[in-house]
Image (cartoon, rainbow, N blue to C red; front, side, top):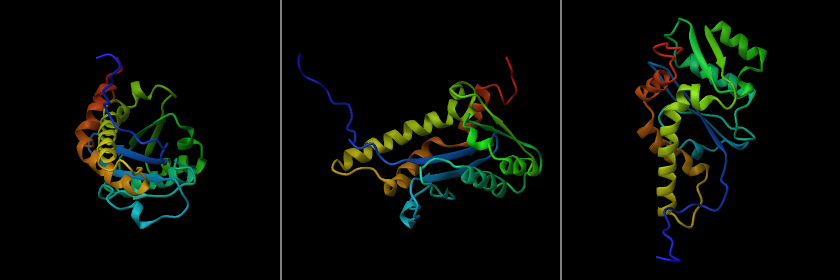
Length: 193
C-alpha cells in the first residue's frame, strides 16, 4: 500500500553505554567472558546474571587498556593451569595487546606465542570473528530487541548487560563454534591454501 510502512523492530534512541567483552576459545577450551564496563566504581549489580565464571574489571573508557590486557593474559594462564605446552594466541589487530614489554615477557614466561593480525582483516582470518562473535552478536542483538520490546520506556544499561550477555552466550558460545572458526580460517587443521 502506498504511504504505509511496516515497523520491523523497536530500538532505543540513546547511544548506550560501552561494555567490552573478551572471549578466549581454543579447539578444546572455552573460558567465561572477560567483561569491561565503562566507569570507575564497581557495583555488585554489574556482576549480576553474567555467564558463570565471568571476570569483570572497570575501565574509564569501557575498552581494554594495557593493564587489563595483562589481567586478561593472567586470567588465561590461571584458568588453564594444566596446560604446560606452548599456546598460540591469535589477537585482533589492536596494538594495545602487544605494546607493553611486560605483557610480552609474561607471554614468553608462560609459553604463549601471540600473533596480532592486520587491521581490517579479522573478518577473514580471525577465527572467532568468523563464527563465534558473529553468532554471539546475532543472539545478543536478539536479546536486546526482545528486552526493548518488553520495556519500551527504559534504556539498556550496564545493569541489564549481564542478563542479555548470558542469554546470548548460552546460545552462541561453544568450543564447537570456535573450532568451526579455526577450520574456516585454515588454522586447525592447518591449511595455508
